Image (cartoon, rainbow, N blue to C red; front, side, top):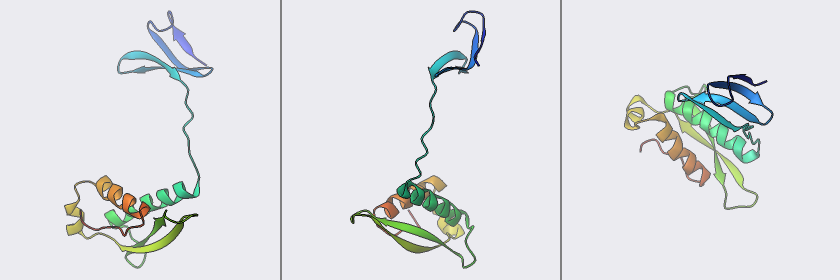
Length: 123
């Protein structure tokens, strides 16, 4: 239920009313359409999320029992596309230092895995 103080959009309106949301952003009153975020649970999205989790663990050294993580390489050239498991050793401190940010490491390797290439350890 929306709570409005004084005339609408003059001082304060917050919460939602039907399909619109009232809020304050950067000191201003804002009205926007209520959006329900999409959460696709397709096979492809599941693989991408799986690889994201495993690449994060590989970067920070949170490996499985054998010191490796298992990534899934996606071959999109075939229909239907196929998956291949790739063993990947966790990064050493020297390798980790070569990457400026963890998301650079993840972004580069996600693209490589999606294009059926092996992940890389250094930029």
